[in-house]
Structures are given as C-alpha cells and as structure tokens.
Length: 257
Image (cartoon, rainbow, N blue to C red; front, top):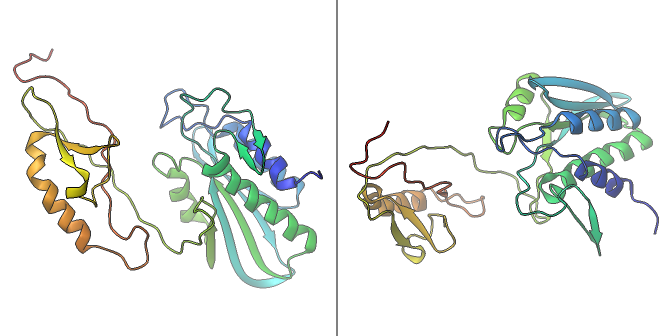
C-alpha cells in the first residue's frame, strides 16, 4: 500500500511525548513537537514563525502567501495532549485497519497532521491568491495560553480549527469557566442527584452528579437556568456543569495544622 504523507506525519507526531505540563506535573510539554512541526513546515515550503508563549512552550505558525493579495484562511490546532495513565504504549503509533491508535491520535494530532499536509498540497499546487496560515498552539488542554497569545498577534478572515467533531462541521462552540467551590458539610459526605431529575447537569462519576450538602438546594435552579440558555445552533444546545474533582479536605471538628 502506498505511503500517505498525512498518516506518516501523524505517526511521527504521536511518537513525540507532548503531555501538557500544566495539566500533568512533569509532563514533557510541547518543546520537541514544536521543533518537529517547525522543521516539517519549512520542508514543505512554509515561512515559519515561532511565538514564545511560556518557557519552552512556543506556538508554531507557518505561512503560505499566494501569487497575489487576497483573503486569508487560518488552520489551527493544538500540540499538547492529556496524560497517559492506563496506556501501555501511548507513544507507539499503531495502525489497525483504517485507524491509527496512540496518545493524541484523535485529540488532536490527527487534525494537526491533516491541516499541515493540506498546506503541503496547496504549496505544491501553488496558491493563486490570498494567504494560508497554519497555527500549531500550546496548552489547549489546560488554560489555552497558546490560543490567547496567537490571536493577539495573528488575524485571518476565516479559520478552521481541526478538533475532532465526528466529521460534522461545527460552526460555533462553547466557552468555559473553572469554578472552585469549598463548602462545609457533615461527616456523611456528598449527597447524590439522580441524573434523570437534572438532565442538563453533566454526570461526574458515571451514575450521578454529586454536590456537598449546602449546594444541593441550588441544583434545580442551575438546571432551569441552563435550560433557559438553550442555543439554537450548539449541540448539545445547553450549558453543562462538570464536577471535575470532589474531595473532602477535612472532617468537621478536625484540627488543621
């Protein structure tokens, strides 16, 4: 079977550990993968810019200018991945049938490889008009400092973010906010909410979304508020609440040193 340049690039990217160090202490970060992507972009004829975002964490931006001025299009994707707990060989790309397995193969080194190889094909054929910008950014999995830095210095008339969407074109997306909540509770621990009672509150542990006692009365209000904010285009069309971590810091009456 003939080699596919996009798949070859994907396998190269999977083999590079780029676990987000802000998300996973000790993670390798994006240094090595940024170097590899920058070199590849140069080989295929793009003009490459490195945008330092934090120590050893740089966005890579490749630019292809057309023969004449025109509108600009940006392809954008992130280089970092989540952790690898529970994976036997996360950085060994494994082709099984028509799929490639490995950490980041879907989220989102597959998208990175696709957009970079699309730029290669465009460069080979020649861009008649306008500008193609290919941006590989850091830190999507934690705080999106790479995207924040990118939009401060780079603009385009339109953009395509190659995140996985089950091959369905998505024309908008939700924002997000992290909220830390501390509350006092008795020693009985968290109370459980039945999923069917609050369908717009996302499941935390597979069976129920759990709130500590003082927060329980607000669940119904949150559910009604979310339902009222339903969006006509987004799928799902309502805001979602994810309980990322539920932890008891200490029990009532315990002395904290």
